[in-house]
Every structure is written in structure tokens, then in C-alpha cells.
Length: 217
Image (cartoon, rainbow, N blue to C red; front, side, top):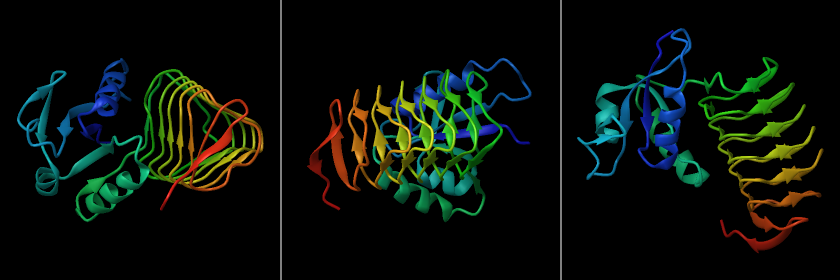
């Protein structure tokens, strides 16, 4: 398998991904990160954390490759970018799982998921949609479902049988009780405890989590 990788986005998430991948010592599973792709004109042609910023979308269109898309807090923008990148014929979105996490083999993965940060514990019979980002120190219980383009930040505990919709953002330190359902497009504020179902397109926060804002779509 080709282990060469491009990282789309030289912002915080992209730089953290590059760092996490650099920790891998086993050459059989390590990724060779060739550099960043970033549309910020000022960054192109520069070096960021010892990696070159090779160019933007036009560079990628010309060169292709395997790419990890690192937009974590704006799922709908990530959707738009992925759709644009998919128009390039010689592009692949690999599944990236770092060896510093414990991940069951009994997981149904979507396209382009990234679980490369440290110390996740992802158990069994879980269904994870396309382009899901799982950061670090997360515990995901059995039979959990996570929808497309959802972002999981750090130190999140998800009970067995919980369901998280598409385009959600789950903040750091959140606890989601077993069998709770979170609707598409909703945001759970950091440190919240979700004890009951959450509708779609809302912001919730608190202990227990309550709706504090509706999201206009």
C-alpha cells in the first residue's frame, strides 16, 4: 500500500495530525507525509513545522495523491471542500488510524476518517460515517453510530448504543449517556453531559445539556 500522504490544511488540526503521524516508529504502518496543501496564498511555498506547503487546490488538481482533509470545526465547509476535491480523478482519501489508540477490528468505517491522535479507545460493533474526525483521549462504547463529517474533539466519553448525527461537533470533555441520540448538525459544548435526546441543528451545553441556541440552516 502506498503510504505517502498529503495533509489539506496547515492550520492547527493539520499540524497536530502531522505531529501525531511523526510519532509512529513502525515503518510498516507509518505514513510519509509529503507536505501540506493549503489555499492560504501567504503560506504556499513556505515551510511549516519542517513540512513544505506545496500549494493549494490547483496544485492538488495537477498532482493528485492521497489526502487527509483537516477541517474539524466546520463540517459543512468540509463537505464542500471534499466535494470539490472529489472532482479530481487521481485522489484518494485513506482511512488513517494511529497505532497509539486501541481500535477494534469490528468497526464499519466510512471514507476518509481520521483517528490519528493519541490514546483513543474505540470498542466494538461501531458504525462511523464518512470523513469523521476523532481527536484524542476519546472512549467510544459498543454499538455507537456517528454520522458523516462529524467532529469529535478530545476526552469525550460516549456510552454504548448512542447515536450522533451527521455534521455534528462534539466539544472536549463531553459525556454522552448510553442510547442517547443527537440530531444532525447539532453542536455540544465542551464539558456537557448529554442525558437525553438532542434535536437537530441546535447548540446544547451544561450539566445536564440543554438547548441554548437554534442553528439557522
